[in-house]
Length: 546
Image (cartoon, rainbow, N blue to C red; front, side, top):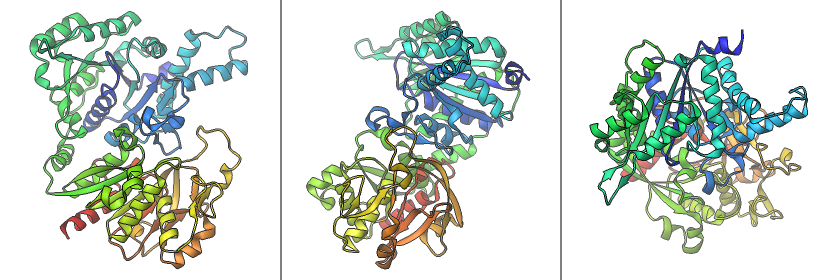
């Protein structure tokens, strides 16, 4: 069966963006994916990023925000985290494509003689490679009804033009009746004029039409829904050649991003999409989603959670952690007030002065030595004051170092990541990482199965003997120090099934003290909070009530 014949079994939705970046295309796409799933359709989501990096794994969190990791170890854009949280699809490396990957593949094919001596050009060779990713996902997911693809960047950017041209060609191959284009734009409001302006949207759509793409739905980012009145809707519809009903406001949410599907449903975006694709299916059942949102908006309890990090001023650096805290909070009908604490400030002023009274303390992942001493002080503060504590990745390594220093009395306890020649390397680089010099995609990445020991906090939370969690790190708990730490009371409650690497450590006789080498935040969902996050918020709630 040819690619074209096979692809006819699937429908395609493409989400593009115009006017400005950071429009919330990812949230709009995720919200639509959630609505289509609630209609009973099987949805698969993916992201095309026009930047030249092969993946965001080597990017600074200040530049790109969080790096989201998939089960197969692919390091991806944080929007894929939204995709997995809003929908049930389990994504893979095939669900994220960058210009770097495209050009890398094309050049390798040219060197291998795949093109049989032809001149290699942007069209057709680069655009063909982009389309091949669509066909590849189609082949790998024959049971999927709709492939929903977000195109990163902004229409008009030079780096994104090849992706849009590829979509135009792809539409000809699979048939226009099987494709729906959604264009997200900004309706800016000029304070002096006191009104929103539609001209940027008109110009953005004109750019798309020059390429040969005519959007079926236009999603307009506004502060308030009422700003997109009937007159402006008619104007956009007329100049952009779409139906008035297909001009939809996507306003800033009042409380939580999970209001997105409910807000878009009010304007029947899912109905427009299934009608455009010729799919006859029942309306979505959003009762469970509404219940979840209601728990966020109307909590019965409140707790204060300190997140101590080094990229704390950037919201997106710990995006999945914040969302996982929200999921766990809703599970307990609790509003978790997150207090962002700069680890370096603790080094200057001390933990108690900076952190103060909180109901829980979380140390997230990170790289490098900046702020690590502040995190160690924060961990000691939580341990000694019986504050529920949760360490993630680097947070687990910090907890181990703090315990070694302050409970075991091991002088010079540290990590070789922070101090190469430290006297006692409680944390050391993995053996298979010692000779690696390049930085991209060569850490311990992706899902790994672990054994959870009985009669531990971890076993109580998971209620399972084996678990699978996602990793992203180069340094590990040094097994040479296992006996010294456990003799002094540290509990190792989980190890990797294959290598026996330490995965979870706990401090007993404490209300809640647990730290994991993996990243549990990558597997938490709105109505399925991760068990450690759920236990952490429950302990924080008990702390606040005590």
